[in-house]
Length: 299
View 1 (spheres, rainbow, N blue to C red):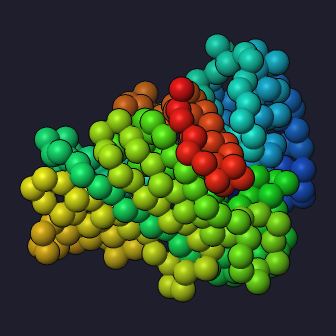
View 2 (cartoon, helix red, strand yellow):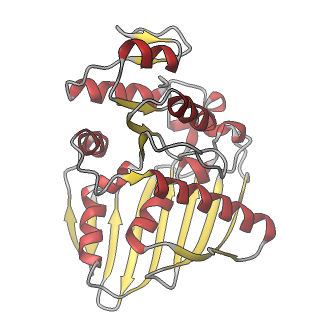
């Protein structure tokens, strides 16, 4: 469902996994099997696995259609799960997962493993990339990333960081934030955001997100009682106390691993519907903190 850049990637990878694939798009596209509506695709193609990769603001409507049709199967929804802090009323007939594929990155999985026996003191995460370079073939001003109304903005677009921080360090107990549209980029969403929070296992977690870094950066530094770790996903390296290990990670590795896990029912590391909903609620709390300039508590 949806055939933008991420929809095309999911389609290509499912074909690579030899999964018979059809595309739902309101546009006329060059693909062997296409449908204009989700209802038509469900009735005629009878899929067992659906990937929802349309605009974030359309995710809720797409899932609601599947629930209304009483379709039973597996659904992968691109991140974030929803545009606003909402919840699906009827999801019992759906197996819904959220596409936080960085959980499958070998470096983050290694970090999760080594931190299991550590007392964590502080975490500093950072992600930034210049928005106009994301999709060079398309004017960034026309993408959903630039439009707050369509679910864009850096806090939602780079919510991978929110998901993996909670996945690694437990649910947040309180947080505050700063952010907004500070650059000269022509967009309606936020382009810079900073978050400070306390989690279940960690007294101090900070996060910076932006649409401006050239070249892009994605890294997290963890200080424990015994070691200092630096995971650099851009350079594919994991450093412990100055000793660096490099990883060979193909561009599509995490996406393929995520699809395989869902298709094979080995979903231990896949983001669940409830976890995805918690991230949406976390985004809402960060935005609340930015407006109120106060701490928000996770009750």
